Image 1 (cartoon, helix red, strand yellow):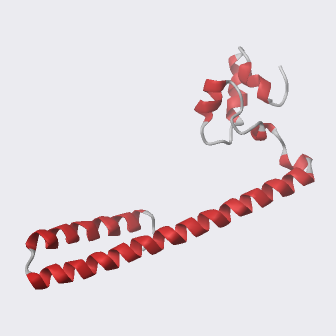
Image 2 (cartoon, helix red, strand yellow; image 1 turned 30 degrees about the vertical axis):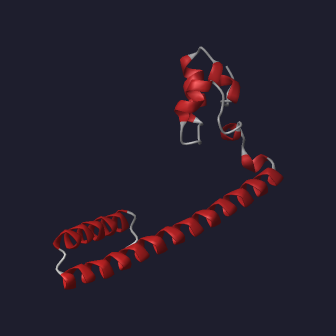
Image 3 (tube, one colour; image 1 turned 90 degrees about the vertical axis):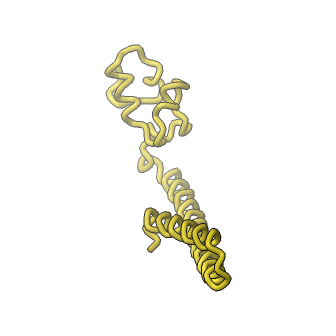
Length: 124
């Protein structure tokens, strides 16, 4: 039994060794590693990033790029939600003026749902 868990420990029959290897999982989906009996993160879970400064810098650059992409996607989502909310408000006002009760009900419902989504996502 090795002192530090390694990727090959995922194949171990010893429950303690296998458990320590699964405990190193940082993929967010250890059941995939369990099913495949191999690290789905290409072994990243078992590598000490500080042991190799070049790998650490590469990983930092990858994570910064991922964060940037996620921020752009979040901004797009917020903009779309706010745009849809404004559109529903306009439709609601129009339906009120024309006395179209089914449309009033529908737009109220959609506006309420959009607001709930935005609250759940802590956007408002």
